[in-house]
Structure formats: C-alpha cells, structure tokens
Image (cartoon, rainbow, N blue to C red; front, side, top):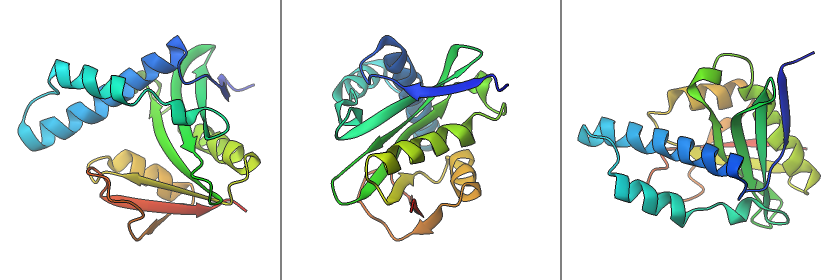
Length: 164
C-alpha cells in the first residue's frame, strides 16, 4: 500500500492555505534570488498571497487536490477550467522534505483525471526557466512544449497534454 493519498481540498482550507504560502514563498524567493540576489520582501509576499487566494480552483471553475504522505499534507496541484475544453494546471508543489518520494507524478495524474472528469480534453501550463525540476516532471509525464498560450510575466515555457 502506498503512503500517498490524493483527494480534493477546498481552496480556502487551512491545509490549502499553508501549501499555497509555502509554494508562493519558494517560487518567489527563487526568482528574486536569481534575478536580484535577495529574498521576497515580506510585505510583497503577504500582498501577493492574499491577492490570489485560489477561488478559481473551486468547482465548477476548477479544482484543488492535496497529496498526503502517511496522512500528513505534503503537496498540492490545482487546475482551472476556462470553459473551452482546456484545463490549466497550476500550483503543483510538494514540500521540500517530500520530494523524491514518488508523490509528484501521481499528484499531477490525479489533477489530469479530475480535469478530465470535469470535461477537459487538454491540459496546459506555463512555468519558468529556472524551475528545471518542474519542466523535467512535465516532460516525463508526456507534456510537450508549445507556443505561448498566455503573456504571464513569469511564463517562459508553455506545455500541453492531450487528456482524451
């Protein structure tokens, strides 16, 4: 039996909020350390976390899944449904201590399954160039790099996968 379980989670639960804070802190700090040699300003961090609470990750516009390892929250993956048969994968994250334990692939696959069940036939995502672990994961799971599908300020690589 696997130590991993994955289940839907309300975007505004305490577990989801803690995962969002950890995710955003990590990706923001990585960007600032790479580009400006500093961590994220605490006031900016709080402002950005509050500005994107994740309401679009609630049915019927999307979903949020939480992975647990041995019963403890370990990571998340969300998807948005813009309404055109496409889902957008977002907030894929595992706490650093949970990485390398085989949870990332089942988490992304569970998000794909949930998006498919909600009517999506295709999954898209964007990521940054410095998030090499994420890009490797997506390639390993069958995502192919595509032309840009948005003009996000931090989007540098775009991927898609057929879910049919």
